[in-house]
Amino acid sequence: MKLKDLNDLIIFDAFPLTYDPKQKIILTHLLHLEEQTLPQKLCTIYTTRNLAEKFKKYCEITNYKGLVSDNFCYLEPYNFTDIVIEKRHTLQIFTCESQDADHNLMILIRENGKLNYIYAGNFLDTRAALLNDDFAKWISQGVEKLYVNLKHAPDDQLYTSEQKLPLLAQCLKEIDTIVKYHEGRTFAIYLKLFGYENFIYKLLNQFPKRVVLLSNLSKFNDYSEKAADDLLAKLDVGRIFVTDGVIFEEKAKLNFEKHGNISININADVASCLPIVLNKDNYFYKFCYSPEPDIYDLQLLVCLCKPKRIYGIVDRFNMKSKPPKHLIEYCKGIAKVDTKVTKISHQQQQPNAKLENKPALPVILGPITYNQNQKGAQGGPFLDDCESDEDDS
Image (tube, rainbow, N blue to C red; front, side, top):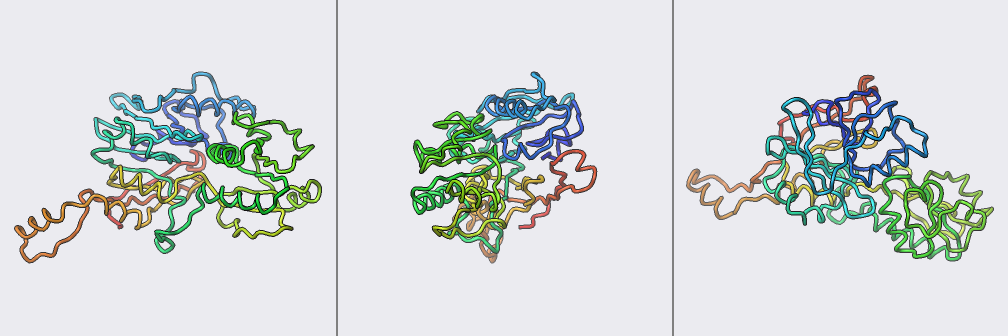
């Protein structure tokens, strides 16, 4: 994704196929990395050492040759870094790192002392960031533009305050229900290679000494009890094997008939996931879970940052761009002026005017569209947006 104000010089979490030495990639997470096409040569990548080491290891196992030792410029969590874009144009960025196993980043960008952008990516640990004094100072005056992932934000017509979303806790609870129901069976969980580190960590805590990581997952996570594919030859009763990839129902049936194990597919596609139905003869379950911000994370971030405009992050993995009204209204409900002061002021200026409860800091929608033409495909899976000062809320 790119920010239009910065042209094509700063790109978030994407790899343009055309090499441009002036471009800078800011890598805030690794979700969908294995689904992206890497170019023959990479420009400078700004990220933390934690994410960089996993990226390097991925390049090794995929035999990718376009990465060199000086590709990375390392960001220190909760510290400042200057990025020179062009002559006389320098950005000061502040990096927030989540404290969970994913280690995702949130990037704050300041120009001429003014906080112009916050790119939240898949950052979920807003509470931890708020404990940092520098982060609190940066957001104290609000931000011009907040870029957030809206994939899990329900539409207005679907939203209720009690609505249950495919959250991590809910997914783990359902897995626990299945494991207890099929007591004595062995289980195999299939998920993506990157982005589910925190899910795996929570799973290990919930089922101590039972979870085993297989295949490439064992190379990127060092907290597995065992890490050997030959364990599949003797499936211990009660074991939970976790591997990267996808399994289809036909293969799951064969595994059930041959080994007696239950297969569980973790998928981000809501349309392919059905409600969980427990049955002793059921050998295949599909879960809808994706480790991206839910509505509660978004509400907290919007409430704290007080943005003037909210934008949806748009790329080929997430096409939801327009913030729902309930998210905007939630933000507006936070920054209210004092009722008594407002009433006195209105009476002095307009004695007959009715009191209106308006936010001290307005939220303005900026429409974003995905570039689906040939030029966009060559440039990479990132945003080609057009901004508007119209308030659509």
